[in-house]
Image 1 (cartoon, helix red, strand yellow):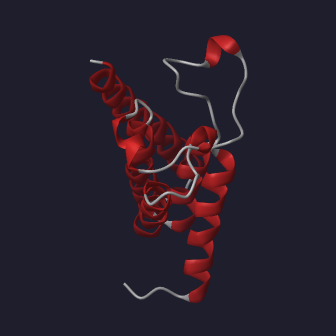
Image 2: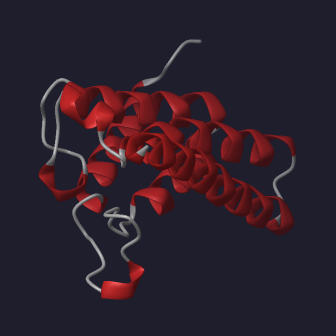
Length: 140
């Protein structure tokens, strides 16, 4: 897979958007579920898959997760480091890789409005299934 400069720039842009979107949180009390804030990360992960495609979108989300794991405070509420692996929110962070991949994969096959809607809904389902299962085991 040969990456052009434009591809790398767009991937880096989505890493930056994820870092910014992680700290734009909802302060509606009934929207916070189990200590997991509502952020723009899911939107940006889906958008990465739709715009960058499955492979580059997943790579950009993987880079985002790795940047946070090495200690740069890019996760929600400015958290970072390996301690986030045992936190209930890490499942959502992991799911972003799958969300971008599957959303991009759906749109690569067919670029219609219905494919974009299906890709976004599939991304949401993957995000919540992986994230809530991780949360379940983290609290157990």
